[in-house]
Image (cartoon, rainbow, N blue to C red; front, top):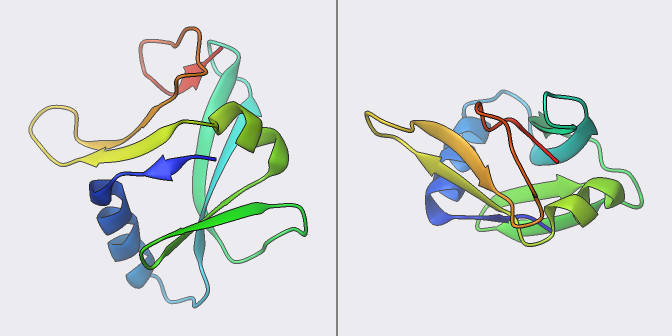
Length: 106
């Protein structure tokens, strides 16, 4: 299951607080596609399947489907807000290679 850094937890929490819907969780998924074979997908979701894995980081709930959880085991979601490298990034030790944009991996 993916973990969140304190910075990512804070930013996701602020983004969820800005939404008008209660009960939202951050869904992180891995989908086939992208230039390296798989791509990451993140969005807010209020639905949870019976077999989804869920973990809380402070006030932030993260939901991952079982197939994605295998590929995200040991991965970390980080957030940076600087002049360089602003935004979310996933450090995934399971990725053997990744593309230049950092959005897909194999």
